[in-house]
Amino acid sequence: MKYDLDTGMGTRIGLVVLSTDETLETEARSVLAGRDVAAHHTRIFSDNEVTAENLISMQERMAASASLLPGELDAVGYGCTSASALMGPDLVEGQVQLAHPGVPVTNPISAVVAGLRALNASRIAMVTPYSAQVIAPMRSFLESRGIEVVHNLSFGETDDRRVARITESSTHAAVTEAAEAKGVQAIFTSCTNLRTFGVIDTLESELGLPVISSNQALLWHVLGRAGTDARGWGPGRLFQTEGVRTAVA
Image (cartoon, rainbow, N blue to C red; front, side, top):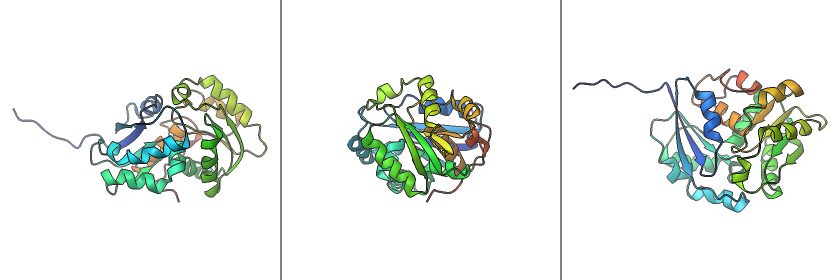
């Protein structure tokens, strides 16, 4: 019997998701439901213990993991904020592009920088689940890109399985406290495994400040780099701004 072929969905993105992550894919579905976007996921092994050493070790597996994604992608997002800061965006991009040459690549920490610039926010408070060992390089990365971290509040959790269970009400309380820091222009909630989509809009309304999360920024940026206008698709002020098609310096 004869059959027809088409070109598939209008936009094709890839997501490299940590093996311990229980949140990124769920929050991505809430953004992409009903859209002309195909999101293809692959997993990369990540130790449950979130340490700098364990995070950096993912670079050895990144190209192989990315190779499991289908071809002809418009952009790829690597889903780990802290590892991206530790390894650097260039290494992340290089490893993914070994499997997908020439395809635009982003990651949460670069996406957050792009998002903060789009919102004209350069003084932030940061809410994280991490230990001090992991927070320090993230802070250095942001400050090297002109983002001043005036306050950091952490849950102090090193087990990624427990991070996925931190309630959104806990994050709401932490962001509210972090927003009290003097001169803060935005709040950044870090970690793709930390649930935030249910509280971002409420927090922005209550605080009068933009709230950017790792997953929100990653999805906004990977769609922008894929050439898709995703305004109105997700939570927060960030998804009211036009996506950025270029890489972040």
